[in-house]
Length: 166
Image 1 (cartoon, rainbow, N blue to C red):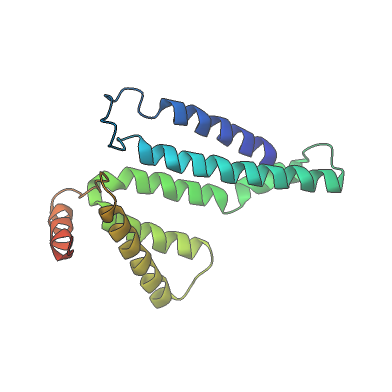
Image 2 (cartoon, rainbow, N blue to C red; image 1 turned 90 degrees about the vertical axis):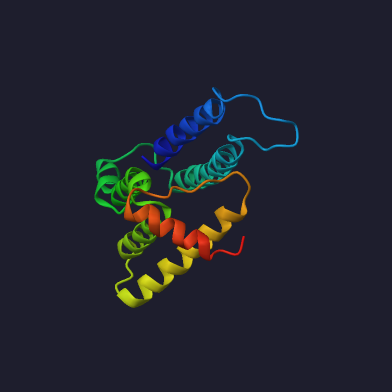
């Protein structure tokens, strides 16, 4: 099941790579363009998927397993992966409404809880630190605009951006 999932995800990422930037106007030679960072992320994801796929194939050959048993297919849906995927979808839906900072903070806290961290103070501190690192990293990169949110979330986003020295 893991091999099939990795192959389907790899093909989907390859399709998205060629689709990214298809309707965008051409950029100047010195500019990166709007499709540059999504393509970089997709290439990194495809490399990691290929490494994971090679490891799964090697493991399957060592076990000399010929097929997928029902227990393995059922464990895919009973594990943490579907919950993590649901969290990622929820993060994408809420991003435009509440903005990057609260969305990333809540996502990091929920994902950390999903992975087993139960100390709320440690979870909040790590999530806040990672959110701050991501915010500064994305603000420092040229051409990356982070969602500000709507209403009071937009005001909060403007306030935080005013605190940044760059």
